[in-house]
Image (cartoon, rainbow, N blue to C red; front, side):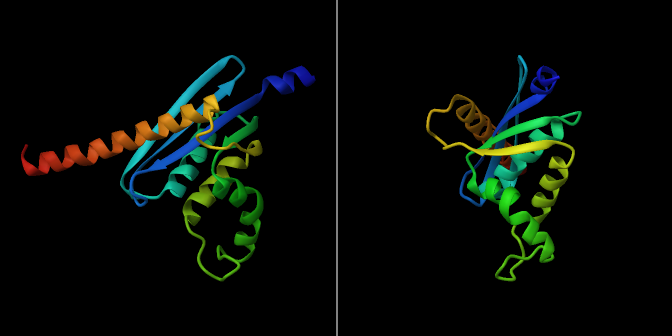
Length: 164
């Protein structure tokens, strides 16, 4: 039985990137399940923030999972890890307001992340970014690719509007 449970553990590494903060942004995720790996990435052409991209990476990775599983999600974002493990319950109790009575930033994404976590058993792990961890570096490269593609979409749209 323990063998079957361990085979159902999905390891996920996520990262977000932003040029300008706010500016075009990207997110990336590496998912590993048994001997299989999958890479995900995307971006936002509209101005966004690094924190929104970090949240989006985790959301997109979790929403990709097709059945309930045990997840070990590795992030280099203390904002995401602390938010989901320490702050979320208080925000909800306070009507999505911080302890200082201010609206929670990115509440839309926090709500999506909470929903994405609901069907899984998620353990949140922090990994130091840009420290040579192979999967975190891959997630970073994917986030940067998503950001580059989003930036190119903005440039392409500008070129079309300019008649080039």
